[in-house]
Amino acid sequence: MNSELTTPKPRLLITGVPPDAVIERAQQLFDLTIWREDAAIGDALLKNVAGMDALIVMPGDKLNAETMGALPDSIKVLGTYSVGTDHVDLQAASQRGLKVFHTPDVLTQAVADLTLFLIIAAARDTSTVEKTLREKRWGRWAPKSMLGRSLQGLRLGIFGMGRIGQAVADRARPFGLSIHYHNRSQLPAEKSQGAQFHSTLDSLVAHSDILCICAPATAQLRGSINAARLALLPDQAMVVNVARGDLVDEEAFFAHAATGRLGGVAMDVYRNEPHIDPRWLALERTTLLPHIGSATAEVRTAMGMLVLDGVAAHFGLAEGGKCANP
Ligand code: DGY
Image (cartoon, rainbow, N blue to C red; front, side, top):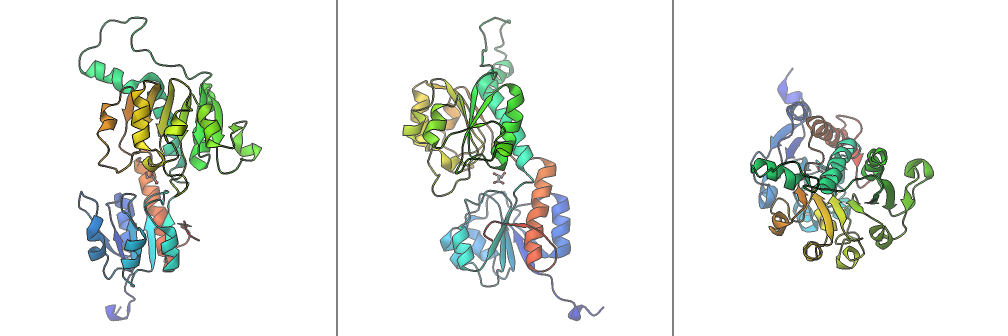
């Protein structure tokens, strides 16, 4: 075939390196460029996106109104390699007529799995006790050493009872946790499965032996785990966050931790990732993971395929995709 007569593939920039199967498919569909540096693309985004038809960003890449406004006119569609869209100004995208595709559903179960791990890690302080072993400070078995809390009978307060919150609840019930939740609206019985609805976040926090943050970091919810709410937590309550660091007022959190009233902390997300506040590292009874909720080989491949579906569908090259600003 005369190559001059074939339609050129749309040009796609992906700002991080996906699994091989995703790269292969992206190359079939697009004229693909991948930002392969270790550091996030940051200010180099605008230079690298010049002449591109489509852009898929990572959760750490900010597409705020200013960046959105500075994108070249050649860009016709956007994607993010995440379910969360807090780093993308969806309104600014819509105003420019750009759809933003994201990756709901495919990561729900993996994130919920990790959340259960974090709940147990918080209750049994596995980070500290593993350190004891690794540092060869493990003494003889003693009835009072390395004690945690039993989950049976504790109240798990889920802030944000969307797909992930519900999947966490499903996993937590067999552990004997009683499920409480706060959400924008009360869920129908078939979804809440007996979980107790709290119409205010204050009420949920006050009834949580383990507060588990699963809500999206919308503008309204940012900083909602603040000093006043932390003060409502029962004594020795635990806090787990698998959603976004921006939901927590970190100054208030460190101040609350210093009172000794927290019974355990397990975090997968922070403000200003990956350059997190060093005070996290000094907290006792705390498990810290580097934002790995969706980090399984299967899920990261599925996420890549899903965001490609949406971006490719825009050019009539595939079907499906999940649009965050329909
Ligand atoms: C998401 O998809 O929003 C996750 O936080 C990234 O793992």
